[in-house]
Length: 251
Image (cartoon, rainbow, N blue to C red):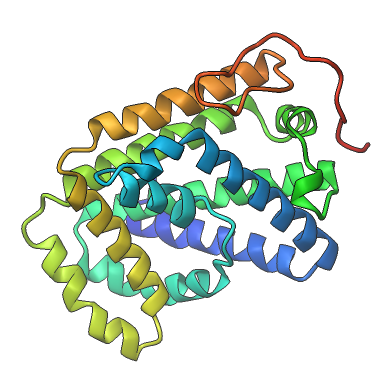
């Protein structure tokens, strides 16, 4: 029998916390991973600059690109989540638990793939990472199925949030949890949940927004696995033709 959403949330929260603790305890891995995450944050902001600039979609784009897949230190949020899981399981509907479990699964998958890529690149300066080196490390770290799973989770989480924000009681429940969460020292995790809820409630229908992100990220995935080296990160410019040679990850 498969795990329920509460069990899956507990398991993935533990996995991501262990990964980040391992990275945090190794100064070299921490520097390499931080550089990679900063490079990726800039790439995402460049690829989706129009969404970030749009008043309607900007908050949701920032939530995706910064809160779900950003270069921030999430260790405090991880610690809070581990303590908050029992309350979430008790108070939230199954649909909301499934969404949070998906978000943490995506977080754990991204953290593992980032560590693999960072170990291949071995670069502490994000400005020293270029597209050809990143592309080569991307193809070597993890599997294509795992990369596709990242995009699937991104779309699934967005679609679930779009449905959840229409739930008449969920917003009030999350707001009511704010006081107890602060008293219990769980403010970062509560703020994360509220930002996602408010960002998607403001859109008023997120299907077009989600389709734009998913289409671009799938095009980049296809280009990278087809051998693209440079130019693939620009909106509408992902291509499969190989570019002039660039720096490869260190062996």
